[in-house]
Image (cartoon, rainbow, N blue to C red; front, side):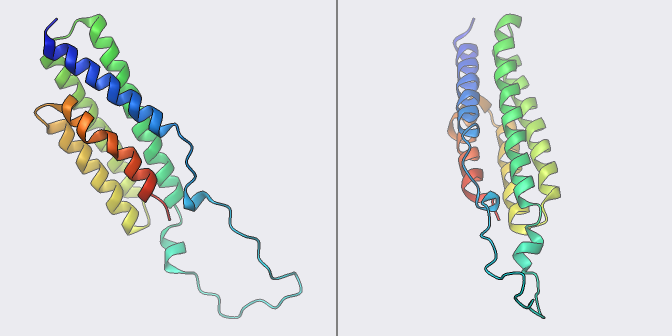
Length: 165
């Protein structure tokens, strides 16, 4: 087995496991945090002019979109790890492993982009579209396994930090 095949397999497996570990951490998102109870009792008069804030309106599905993007990335990372492991049993060449990784990344980018289209909040839509574009860039990289080590590993952390209402 060539040195490049071994490197590609190890890199893909290492990155996928790292992403899985980061993704499995249950970091609370601000959008998922419980809101405080209203201080107004049942006898308090209701406000006559209650207007919903634009953030509340546009961010209505932000928590769900962010959660689904996390799920899609975890699922895609698991597929990359599974396919990398299977490539050893199938004795694939370095080129075949690279092509498989490119297809997996392109599929993952498409799945992430589908979640971006669901986002009501333009800021979240842009963040998720940018994430899909970054993953697409990895699918076109000359060395996608190296791209995963340098770029892909930062994607879950960025989403955890920025994908919330």
